[in-house]
Image (cartoon, rainbow, N blue to C red; front, side):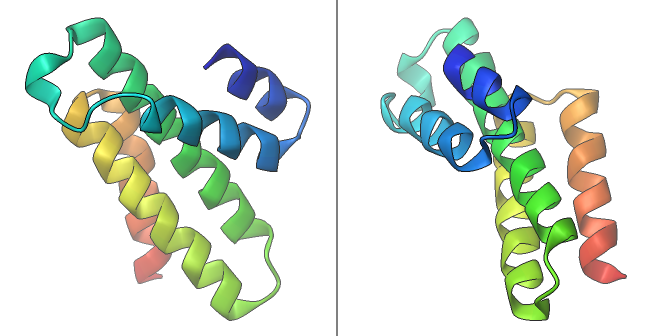
Length: 102
């Protein structure tokens, strides 16, 4: 997780995406067997992915690519909020939905 945050901070977004996905894929999809710390970490990984996809969508000049990134961002933001309902995650999700509607 920390490596993904480092990659994001130095603008190595693809490496950050790979790190966050690796974190997510290394845990079970069955939330009932995970402790609260792990669930919070997974929510954070999904949130960070949503932020990266949102940023990429915003930066894209291609309408189709922009739409695809925004859709991915919404999916990840929703997962983050569903896992760990936090105001920050909800704001991110709301901002992405506004962008998709606008």
